[in-house]
Amino acid sequence: MVTSANFPAPDPVPTITPTTTPTAVASTTAAAETQLTSRLLKDGPKPKHAQLREILEEICATELSPGDMLPGERALEETYGVSRITVRRAIGDLVASGKLKRARGKGTFVAPNPLVSRLHLASFSSEMSAQHLQASSKILQAARAMAPEEISAFFNAEPGVMHTHLRRLRLGDNRPYAIDDGWYNGSYAPDLLENDVYNSVYSILDKHYKVPVTDADQTATAICADEETSVLLDVPTGAPLLRIVRQSFSEGRPVEWCSSLYRTDRYALKTHVSKAQPRP
Image 1 (tube, rainbow, N blue to C red):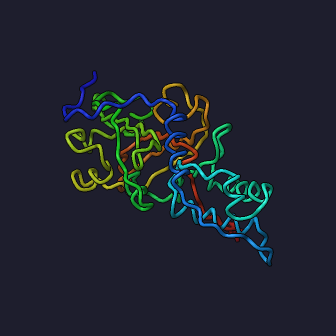
Image 2: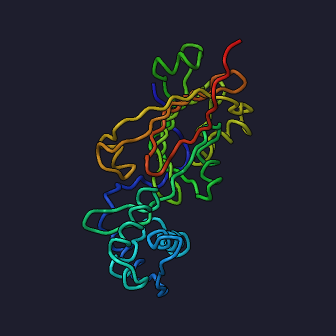
Image 3: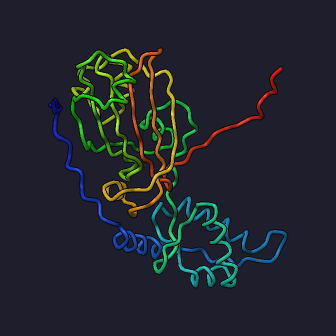
């Protein structure tokens, strides 16, 4: 038995087609509008390619946005009085560090800033806000239904209890970052879909149902994007994705089971590790 949610219909999820041509056009325009200040680089303690790399980093940070095209190699040669080899080495260093991305036959573009998660407990909305990105969602599926056996067992709910199934495309500054496929325990949040689930569900669980998420178990694996996922996340079919399954608790009460798929060029995990202390 499935009960559909009764809340205002979301904007339709657009059919996301590859943005190669529009992006290239927009980016070319941005590159053409970038005014390079003529400055001849001189030999010194710092090699010319390192000097140029710093200049290009500054241009990317202050004059260009993610997705914009970098000025062409010839323009850089003439502006800074350096060789083609020097230009390519500076650009290569920035590509290797993730600051730039090359597109064969099109040019070099400013790479998007990846969302960095430090494996602390936080909602997608709060992680985006911490990195000065505007979080939003497109709802792909929302209903009350019987949960799959694995999830029902995790919730430890009474037989017949309906749970909330919420699948969302998560966006940062209107660009796709992830797909969240979440189940929420109907014993603690029976009418969750009557709330504004376009935004942070964690905030709703805390403020409306008094079951704040206090801890969680997470498992991270790598998978390849299938056809449907590739369209939603705007990546090629077969592209590598990060899959994180989170089982969340509120003071020991199981409240959420969520499987999230992240674009690996827009999301990174960062951890701090230390040497294990020997056992006495």
